[in-house]
Image (cartoon, rainbow, N blue to C red):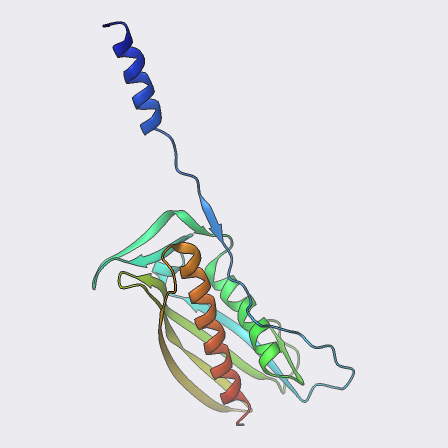
Length: 185
């Protein structure tokens, strides 16, 4: 009986020491359809920069555990830097929402509109909501429009997969709001 104790202990310790697997997430560009047009673009929009708060610039997905605490996940990670993903999906979503416009993350000409976005919240929260907060500034021929945004969207399911999908939906919703403002100039 005593000879089985070391074997049982070894099995128990090996089971406890298994490393959890890492999962990587990429934001989907929802509903973005890029139309190819032979006609010249009526307007150009340069998405110059999307910046994120320092706590969001980490590789881990952020989750708010209570009113003052945040956790940066160690095993649920962004597949590429969050600011890059936000910029790429915003270009894609704006391109779909602004037919006849050329939307790019590269400068195109001197008479283009210029958009800059600052993200202060892009995370999950303890009450099952996805939080997206920040502000954007649009420069149209020297006229500036600055708008804050704050979205709290309820997740349909639990888990990181559902959180990322909900964040992507909220980001698309904000892209539509930006597009609506840009067309008013």
